[in-house]
Length: 125
Image (cartoon, rainbow, N blue to C red; front, side, top):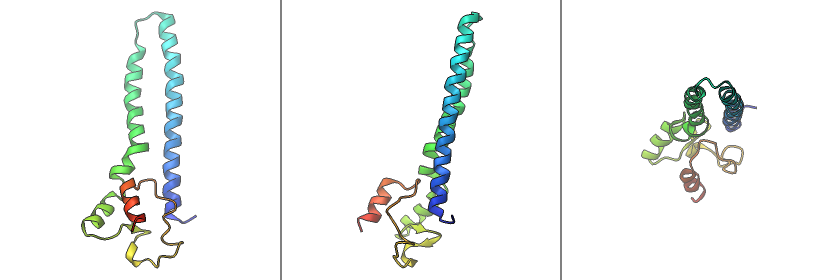
């Protein structure tokens, strides 16, 4: 499928799925390490693993959920269009250049990186 909205949605969903897989592995492995450390009595070393891996997990969460919403690939284009008083770009063209057909300008499915205020301004016009 060549629809950029579909590709963006698929990429977002894949990133979220990868994060949840990472989270599940983190919980399972660190539960095992905690039990191993408690049984062996060798001095609570597992928290260093949890701390280091937790930082990596937090970065993965940021990339999966927040990064595209604030400073993603289309953020600069949206801000430039906003400052110039233009409508946001769709499919590589300005919204004024589109012929308002549902195939070209459909707001029923917002992009994953579109913020709520922009979507509300577009739909209230």
